[in-house]
Length: 415
Image (cartoon, rainbow, N blue to C red; front, side):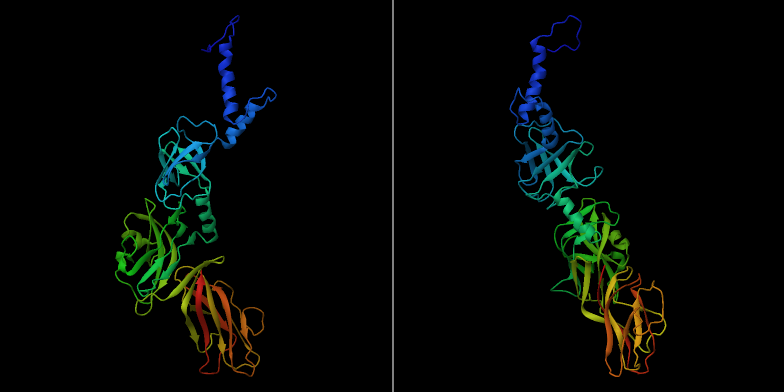
């Protein structure tokens, strides 16, 4: 036994020196090195190996039950402690809630999210052939998946590129398009940015039925009663405390009515919009995601504006785009007459942009040169709407032809 204190004249025996030397030798050999009298840096090399790779393990477990074994002869901790980090390449992808064990220690839950309120894993959180990193949190009694793991960071990249959402595309039901819609799988960050949530499966919802959870369930808040004609309904992804994702609609931009009906669901994000026609049917549309963002095209274009006489003063025009949020509207607009040999100037702008008198060829706004030939002078443009789905329009001259109109057609929009 090594003395705890020394005094002048005490004899230092070999047994006092052997344990420290044995510890140093084990440190060197466990790191994979062979002892050498010619190398005086083996202990520091071993320390560097443990610092760089001591937390890297081999997975010998199964899906949802990951068991980590040390690589080579590296030693493993004798107990879990706060901040203990592990890295490994999973042999199996997870299909739901999971546990993690380091060889010799009992399994503990493997979760994700914040240290104060971690949530269980769902399908796709652990992917084969990609390194997983997790850190033990003593206060939560579990390992928490690092946000830098591929399965966690890749959705973030896609979400950031698409304003907080990746995929989760809304579409008419192919069999019952008038009253049912689908939302595809994907990832999103809720409106309070409290976390990233994974919608595992595509879900069908029924617009005309009161909200109930799950695919095939209703989408309408109880307080809204029945579907109204010619009305915009915002589509929301909603999340409960267990991290389960569902969908519904609301006329409120903050899902107030929907969350009051969907008991236990507190987080939300608007992911799309539905417009009903005069018969309270969902108007057919197509949503897609591209590098420009999430966009919607109407299956049939809307002639939203057809004005005679032409609007020679600044006029607000309402388009068939979502109510309550600014979007980039896809439109065409113009006139159809031969009144003015030198052309009739016109513009369509965001209502916040300054008013001016458009002139043919002015270089600001759009214009049509009619000359002596009758034809439609029109342009295709993308214009930012205001919160009331409006744009501002103005022409240089009024038309003298009773059947000629200034028109705006709406094709769709980008959020």
